[in-house]
Image (cartoon, rainbow, N blue to C red; front, side):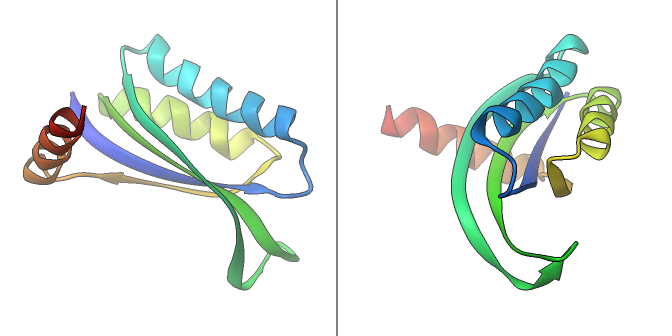
Length: 109
């Protein structure tokens, strides 16, 4: 199990129900392979620096997770196939950074 962080940019033309459904499908695919979802931060609407698929703004969601590479690949497949997703990026976090975030989160609780 490795720590990851993913950012998903959804189309703002999609309604909240379809955005939540696409996010839930991706996270369920991750959980089905034994992945653990950490924090889900909804950043909301943001303006792009440049047009992306003829859109000027998107709805951003950042998810921290711990999973195997196979589980992350399944989650990415769901996001690639979802029409609501404009872009997504998965980054593997270094173990030191992941440990610091976990320690900070437990200290704040």
